[in-house]
Length: 131
Image (cartoon, helix red, strand yellow):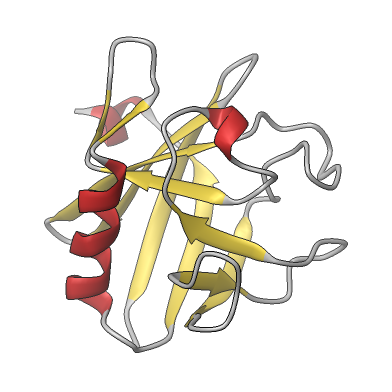
């Protein structure tokens, strides 16, 4: 089972990140950290099982067993307001740290992971993550 790392930087109005596994990298965008408040906050740092989701609202991938939260999914979007606590995927961040080419980023993730489950390790980013 693959283990992907999501290295995050917390901004006032959003949380930006890099999702990676060896040389595979995608940009992420989430709501800001607001103490895990439902629909308003990104989820806590930690390790989660992620499953292929073909029945949920967005039908990409679903993060399992997030304490105090349900229906946390990976899906497309451009700004943090396109998420109710989920993890948005894109190819890169623009100058305002919004996502670019979100749908293509999701296709790349699906090509890389397929229908397999994977482990997601979420942690705070270091300056080395952004180089």
